[in-house]
Image (tube, rainbow, N blue to C red):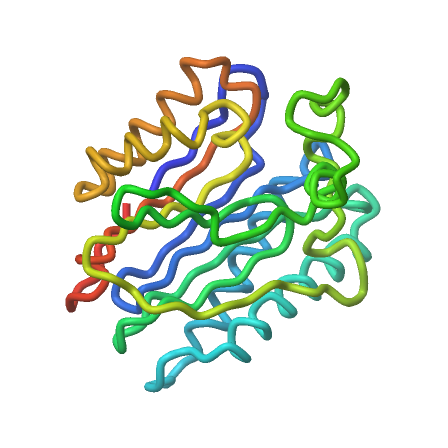
Length: 246
């Protein structure tokens, strides 16, 4: 697990957290300027972790728990913004994952922070960005080489704390022992290609802290135009007692 302010921004508005014992990992990328973005991400991550780790809970989290965790994050961010004029308009992305003892992965997201899976050498994004850019790609209105795509980056169609109701995407899949998973903010994906991410995970993914630091370094070496945060999870470790998150 690693987070860096990058080479251009003055403050880090990303937040990451994990609970190795419970197999939990969550990442948020705040927006709102000044203190707002950092505060929104901090509140969102804290609320998600609170709901996913209720006192005395023995059963593994279920899909509805994950939804409720994101709903709580949305409510907490909105309440904080309503209470402080200086935080009005703040919001955050959020991507969270739960590696369960039964060998399954429960995950959900809002915004354009992503969850990737590397399986059998193939990298794929398990999340679909809630962004104007992705919506226009899906509609066939633009392609990767279209003029002006850079101007659409960061324009979200869904975010935590912006609307009274939030609609997260959630899913469950089976883990395979050799899988590597990556949660990341767009500070990584805007700077580093999927091919290079795949190479790092394939070569260093069995050592999550090292892989995480290397991905941060790559983003900064290529401009570091935004805060960059990553959490790398080895499926083999996650399926053993004492989950290892990096």
